[in-house]
Length: 182
Image 1: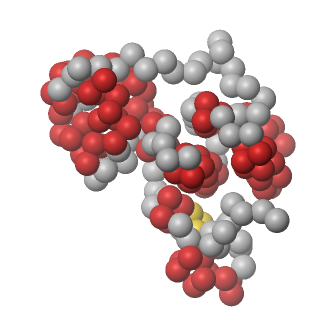
Image 2 (image 1 turned 135 degrees about the vertical axis):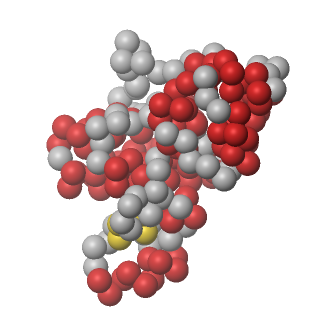
């Protein structure tokens, strides 16, 4: 998680100083920076607070065109509405990319499958622009059971092979070009 290391270095903190300030284990900071650990949302909140990284809050809601707003719409409209809201966001983002639209984490009440899907999407879109994924993406932990988004038994093997790393790491399996639209 190079974003954490860069933010720590910008703040002029050592790994030990950040760990002490955030009240997390030194080893946690080491593992996160090396990419060998997925942080919980609560750990990321502590680290961002310790780094004085501004956290979006309900007092400052995300813009209507933000990824977290798309997640809110899914919460409002039901699980099956994710395709409409997620793809509408991706299309709009690609037409007029503003990385700030990826910064606010979706609600923690979002289904874990969708949280993984939204995090992988944010990571993919950030990578397309050559920037680090937002810190909240690291909090989208791997699913206990794999989720094959297509839901078609005949496509499981293809999804296992083709799924991009950002999705596969979270136990979310999609077809190659999942975020590409005609």
